[in-house]
Length: 447
Image 1: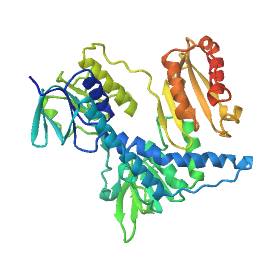
Image 2: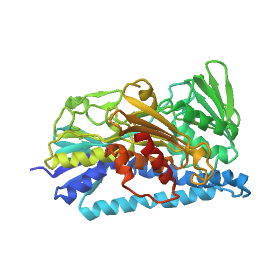
Image 3: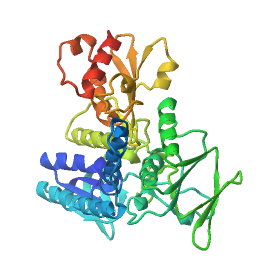
Image 4: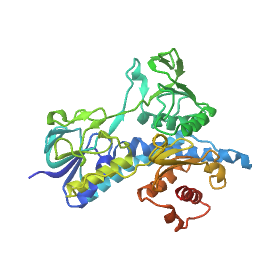
């Protein structure tokens, strides 16, 4: 007889959804956590970043109305904003721990490690369990160059009590662009150094170019095709050097060159559980090479985007599988959003994929910021690209604009449910919401 039915290593979205579902189903459940309860996204990732970023979105929107006679005003105190963030984010741990206690989940603090297929150690203690779920997530990568001890990661950036006057971001990915957007709007000097020749390679080039152009106009200095070779501490600052000879004097360096899966110290190799560069290898049931041990979320090696909603989806699936469901995991279409100003979002078949298969897809460009100015709040650059299949259903979309994060969820539903032009014609939508105009354009694209 095992002490627990299911033990989960990690308490983030990759774990706690399954834990709660299993506990409610009558299973004896334990969660082992070595860091902050509820994981990265909740405490020092998505939630913290979005909370800090929201006021800048209001200022950005207000600026668009200068042309309508409204003077741009408003001032953000980073110190007050950070204090608010700390208070709000700090309330989540007791809330989550209260939920765990309410449904009967035991929260055990320590580094989880597999001893065998049914034994897990944490600290100096061990427990026995019928099933294990590994949801240890990822951590920031660290560029292997001299002086990298002076680098900071996104978690540290999102805890800065005051903003340095000069900041340098290494990498032009999502983290850099989202954080740099805030910093530049605070009037700080910002540099972004990127090895590749463009930013956000997974997103439509024209949309990315619009964001880069706007950030450049706001003072962000981009350095593409540059490989950081070292960082040097000077008397009162730092010097970031690249292989081509570029030198940037700065007060703070953020390494945003990627993330790596937390697979070390788990005892995987001893049990024959395979890992690769992407993380833990699993089968179509999210099981590792040891059938009683599952993996979920960002720690898993997969082609599906490593996002919070994906981790939650996998976590819930694993709970159902443990409870008796035998269907293989079937991912729906997965939307994703870059929270720059303006936002970039996409879902389903990408624009690039469609361009390479024009025999299968029809690409429809809708410059709705030009067509629907009163609905898009004067956001003239707002744009959407529809990818329509030969069966006249929507297969994918890319969006640019402040409403992209909300619109992409509606578009995701339309793709998943294979909504047709006839279906849309039989529904009435609120006017003059921006969705009304978008759905009218979509109906014509599907006809």
